[in-house]
Image 1: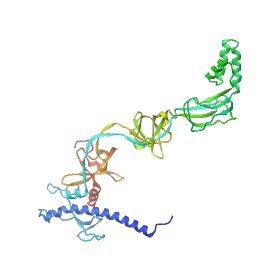
Image 2: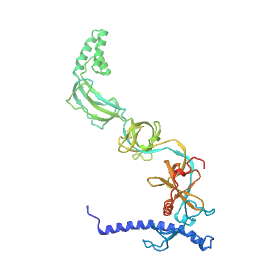
Image 3: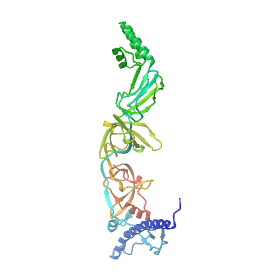
Image 4: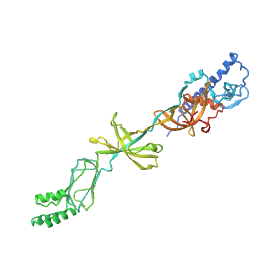
Length: 423
């Protein structure tokens, strides 16, 4: 493969630089918006004017660099002061980063209230249509013989019940039928019953025995038919071949019902149960929903995909559902009460989950939470928040960045009010 040209490399470098610059400018603007409030208060002649001293000076684009005096950072940007936020009552220190209303509007910050509601334990999974393995007919030779004729069949053909597969010549049946017909002329019921029983033990179907008895003619050639309607899966019979007793000639899978095998994530296995309502949607039938119930949950999980196989049995009138089709499966669950926040309010770091808690006087504090189930855009809070708390839904990443500039630590779970506890 040819390496990138110099012009392509230049364009990539410029694009990456633009992204970095955009992120830095966003943080820089947020910092200046946050610093605008104390500056304005000083200009109005606030009692606190001149009394507040900055902790240090910094450049939002390089938050790791701190300076004792105002000046220019290593990035060539003018540094801004960082003040210690104080509370409204008695100057006591209050947790959180303060953002004024002008900055809130500029960032498009939206808030939501932590509330109690019903959360459905539904599960969405992908599935594949398969044959119903309980509806498979195995067609075997009942006695040793020879294949005289094979009908025009092939694997994949769909047959109706009673369709012929092959004609077999069974010499043992021809001799036993002759003896049976000879004994019928004696009128001895015991001998006739014994001869008829012998035909059954040789594997002759009851219908063929009645046909020989009614016509008075021996039939050494029998036609093997399929007992069910369905598709031929295997066909192991050819004209002229010799077959032994019990040899499998064909397998036919029924199509009246099919299985839908859904791959459910292992982490959601606790939400699935036998008898649960399942709704399936297939790309082949847009706008149509197939409804059934979960019939089985397989006892082993797939090691490569970490999924659990859930089996749903669907009716298949007209054979519309073809094995191999893909489907989207929705497993409905019961709704249970939970403490909820919008899913978009959660900041996922990979090691923990955070939300930005809105306090009084425009203060915001990162709070660690424990997340449970999620559905329909809502996330269950197991610990870290209480009902009635206000959290940031949009713009929380920029506020979190500002909190990181001030070394503001997130409130850990141990010191939080747990979900469901009284405040």
